[in-house]
Image (cartoon, rainbow, N blue to C red):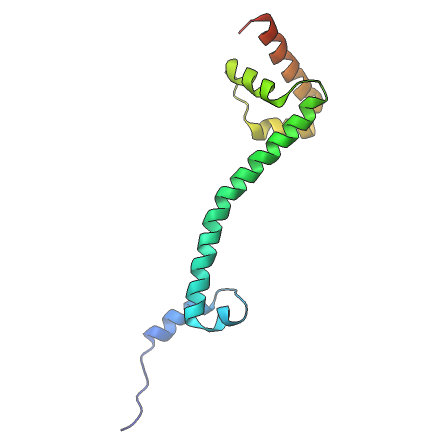
Length: 120
């Protein structure tokens, strides 16, 4: 019996997999490429949430470090911001604390001064 060549469909499907940039067997073996691709997608999904968490922590640290120099605690500042219903998020406050620290001091002093007096 003569040898028959198989169709091109499976080869075409595997060729798409081998275009991925993995190293070693994860680049050459179809089964291991599929497993590595699944693992990469799981890691990417997990680390998107982790990245959001890490940036929020970084922003809080930056705001707290800048505000402490003026003698105000971070939690007091955030509490008074919410009480006055001002729309500053942590990312914006962290950028202000890096670029223009005096502006952050003015914001914090105004908010704290009004909260002590009792004016909304």
